[in-house]
Amino acid sequence: MTAAIFFAVEGTLLERTESPETVAERGLETVLGEAGPALVETYLDTVDQRPATDPAAERAGAAAVADAVDGDPDPDALVEAVREAEIEATTVPEAARSGLSALAESDHLGVLTNRSRDWQAAVLAAHDLDGLFETVVTAPEAGAAKPDPAIYEHACEQVDADEYVMVGDDYEADVEAAREAGFVPIHYEDDGPSLWGALDALV
Image (cartoon, rainbow, N blue to C red; front, side, top):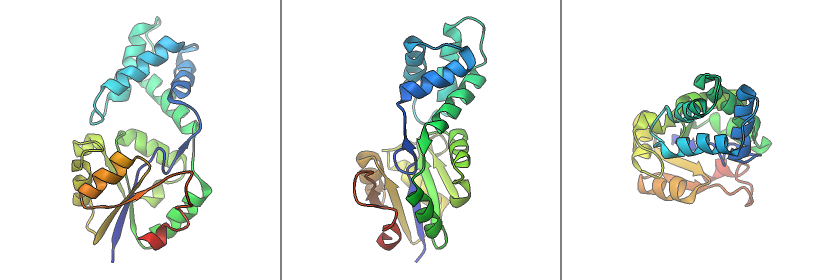
C-alpha cells in the first residue's frame, strides 16, 4: 500500500531554539545595525495581520520596517536576513533524520505548511532535508491555510496514494483538520514517546 506522509515543519521537523522576537531582532539588525522592540513589533505584527495565503507577508513586514527607519533599507534584504536568522534558530532532531530517510525508501514524503514556498525551500535546503520530500504544499499555493481542511484536500490532489497521513504538533491544525479531510493524523509531541523510531510501524 502506498502511503503519502505529510509533515508540519516548525515544531515537528524543526525545533525552534529562540523566540520569534529574538529571531526577528537579530535578522533586522543584520541589515539595520540596530533594531529595538518597536521595529521588531512592527515586523511581526504586520506579518501576523496578513493571511497565511499571502506569499508576500514577510515582505510586507519588511516594507513596514523600512518605512519606519531612515536610510531606505531594501525590504528584500531584510526578508533574507530574517530568514537566515530563523534558520540559525532551528535544529533537526537526529532521530528525525534517520526516521525520515527510512520512510523515504518506501513512502511518498511531503511537507504541508502555512509558510511560503520560498521560505520552505530555503529552510529545507539549509538543513539538508530537501532531498527527502517529493511534495511541498504551501498555503499560498493551495489558497487555504491550516486548519482549513481545504489545504489537505489540495495535498491529496497533488499525490496519488492509498493512504494519506499527517504528522504535526498543532492539535487543531495538524490533527483535527487533517482527520476531517480524511487523513490519518499523528500528533507529534516533543516531550512524549519517541515518534521517529516508531513512525514506520505506525503507518
